[in-house]
Image (cartoon, rainbow, N blue to C red):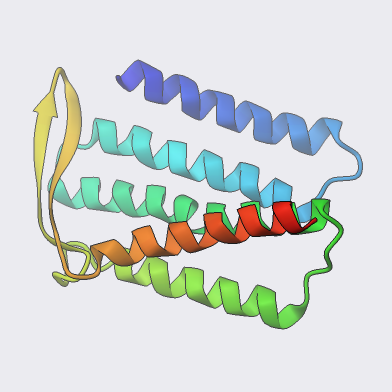
Length: 158
């Protein structure tokens, strides 16, 4: 498993670097999407190597930092590809929503909102975070579903 996480992390870094080097007319949100994917993979790699609960929670937060903003970057990339213009209020609103969602997730280990409790389990040499979900855990699912519905609606409309 650790090798798999290492390979996906290396590939995501490689694709991000290649995009930044080879593409002359880069799309900002697509660049940020590549960065978010890399961040998610780095977080999962760190989590698989974690030896303490505190580090595992930190690694999980790194992965969530990337994944919370990944959906937003996908939506903005789709909007741009479909010819829509992004207005400042929309960008600020969705960035703010992402920050709030990340702060809900980042309460793990401090407040029982997202995870009531966490512990470590090692399976075949790979660390796994065992979680007891809190009351706001479903908020992330709703967050993701809203983004994917918006993406599908935008694609169908265009």
